[in-house]
Length: 393
Image (cartoon, rainbow, N blue to C red; front, side, top):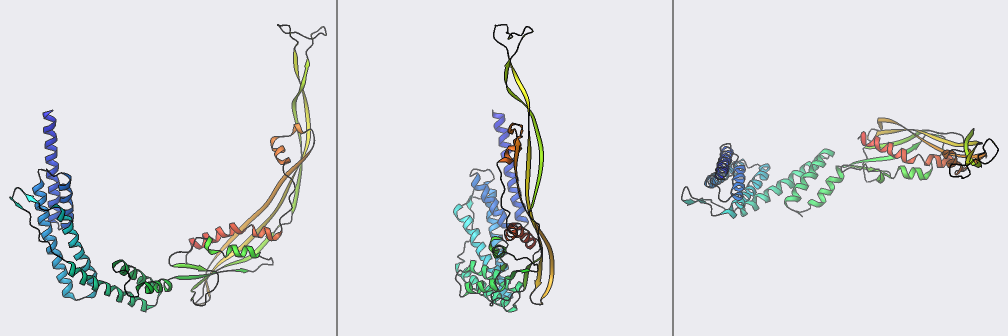
């Protein structure tokens, strides 16, 4: 038992030494914040650690070096007098406060080896942070406005994200909310979707409505919106046209096939007779009976109703600024109406299970040409959606 305790003690001591060494390496490499985080973690994990003093010393050194490094960087940025440095100054001050707040709950930190408490010179950076934040927000506001002046999709989008950053730092600042929405509007690709019928067939109005129900496609994205009605207030750069070039509808067809069925079935019973013409008896004296089998037959007439429609179309991408076709994708859809039913003559017992299922069906009036075309709608929508999603403008 003592040996086990001794081994565990050695393992704990080695582990503690290793953690201090890792921290010292972070410190020597200039990773001051990481060194502080790791040392604090170790202190919280084991208050009686044999290397507690080592962790405390690292926190003290790393804090002093982190403050000195941050102070030098802020001084350099302030001397540059460049407004673009406002962001770094603001977050550097924020980080100094964060480090102080991580250490503060642990105080006092008594270093037993040195016989004194670790020294931390905490400062109130609130006024510095307020001034840095003010400069940072003003910089973001001016920067976003500058991008808005370039009046390109890319720059409007950049301005939008800068306004978002500004709102995260300072909500409700001036007219940022309105400007952000303007940047979103001008940075959006508005695409006009329409239908064109170059066939001799009439496209049902209900099908047009379904195909133009763009909200059901799920293809709108943050910077891309599809419209099916032109808004005069919007400058459309691109259009997508679903152009029907052929609608082929087959004639209504009835195909009949007659098939013979036969089956050997059990059809009652009869007495079994012995060679003397008497009813045969079993060992218990009972009359012996035997099953009677016979073959039955029937004729099955299977009728198949069939009618189909094929639609060929092109999905045409057009640059509306130059009125030129930028791309073209073929699209085809097939819809088949099919109904199968049966009738029979003869003995129903000869029929198969499938025959009996078909007997339950009956003739159905063929759908109209308009209905057939309409029934292709779901397939057309799926294919149009795939083309648009896989071939963005």
